[in-house]
Length: 82
Image (cartoon, rainbow, N blue to C red; front, side, top):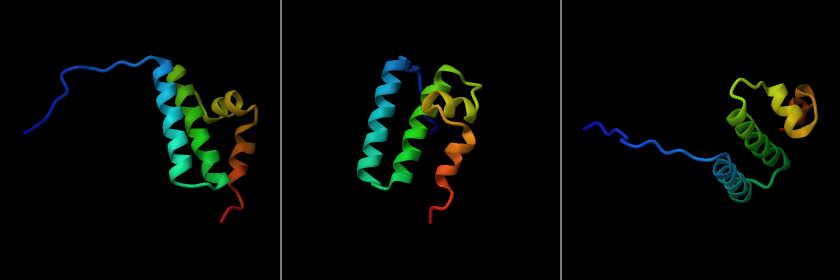
């Protein structure tokens, strides 16, 4: 039996922001306390909200808006981790 959704849920940007913030906090608390993991969770949060407003945004756009750093600098945060 195939299930189909008959109604489409819609959410405001504030609702998506609150859900994403809650998810980021939960993951940081429950999964890892490591800086690199927390940084990645925060980056995902910023990227999600940025793409919600600007679906064609690039990683460089997200890096600049969320952190005021270049994309290369942010990518460098994960080099050298083991």
